[in-house]
Image (cartoon, rainbow, N blue to C red; front, side):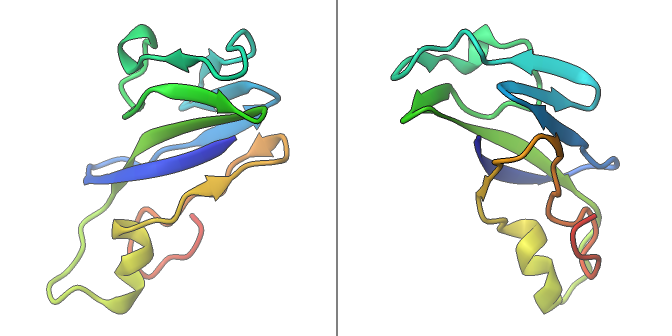
Length: 110
C-alpha cells in the first residue's frame, strides 16, 4: 500500500493500520480487496472523510492519499516540523499499525 499525505491543521491525531488490502482509519475499515489491477476508485465512492484522492491499484499495490492532521506549529517554523508539514509518501508492506509522521513538531513517529 502506497500512502501519500495531504497535511492540515487539526486538533486530533490519526491512527492507521493495515491487514492485507484493508486499511483501518481511526477504527473504520476500508476494504480495497475487490479493487482490480489498473482500476480507479473515485474518492467520492469511498465513505471516508480522511481520503484525499482516488484509489488505484498499480502492479498490485494500492495507491491513495490521506489527509494528515498535525498539531500547532510555532513560528518561526522549527526544522523538525518539515516532516509534519511535508511528509514523504510511505510504502506499507507489513500488516499492523502504520507509523505516521509526528502529529507534533519535535516528536518523531507518533
